[in-house]
Length: 48
Image (tube, rainbow, N blue to C red):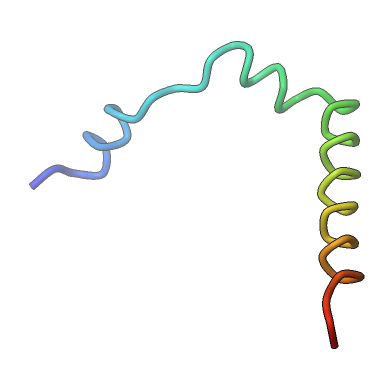
């Protein structure tokens, strides 16, 4: 049975591009806005 440390060592690490995208504030603002628009669309489309 593997230990947690062995499983963690085998996990893939994020690429430099992934880390840069995660740290980009403008990109996060855009993603936040898009997620909110999707949620609003779902709420307004619902038939209550």
